[in-house]
Amino acid sequence: MSEFVPLSELDASMYSLPVPEALDASRIGLNVKRLRGIAALGGFIADETRIMSAAGESSDESVGIGGTSGHAAFGAMSASARKARTADSQLGNGYRLDAMPTRRPSSVTITLNSTAIAEQAQATGKPVREPQAWSAPIDHALRRELSRAAWRNMAKKPTWPEQAASTISFFFIGMSQFWNQNFDPRPLPVAIGMINAMRFGEVAHGADSWREAHFSLLPFYHIDRAAAVSARLACSRLVKAL
Image (cartoon, rainbow, N blue to C red; front, side, top):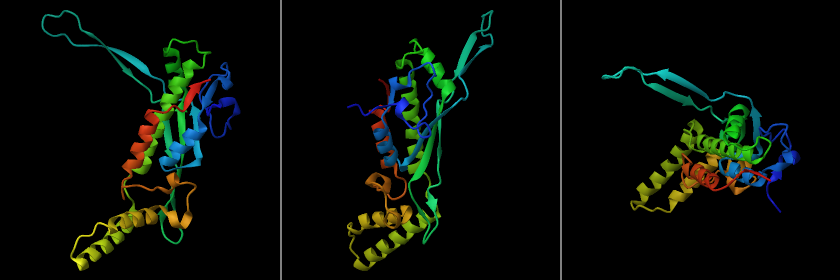
């Protein structure tokens, strides 16, 4: 059984892809399970990962006249093209205030530029009523923007609660090393675990899965998680023609 769910069977309030009305929505599928898993790996709540579509900027081309040089009698024609961005993303607020300031997985909304994607679909040379003309541009735009969002979420600058948590943890580690007068690497994983727990409230608030718990090999910038998202998206498809 295919893991790709036809668009006609998806909740439009959660997953709305930019396909024309003339195209049979049952002929393009979204791998919802894979999308939710990769989103959780990037620090997003699976149930709050949305895909929307909206008309946006289109790509344009401009032609100019270059200046003359040497014995050239005519200016050189130059052409430049500006490609419109095919998608954008908005991250939710992952912070909460209770017993102590912590961060939890946040929501994310990826908005696909239907105008730019329609231009790419037409540029494929395939009939616009065929799902193959739309699946590739949508898939590429979605995977690229989800990767961007993961890097923004997992590799952003630590805030003051996160810096305070790391300072406290490493202070106690440093004091223990000073009193022992011998370097012992065993407390380091404990320190990183303390930082992650204090930063993301894993113990206090729990998580739906290990991927949403923000576990990482690095205490501050979770570039390992962001890199894992990019690697998975590079070899996985989220949208395909059925």
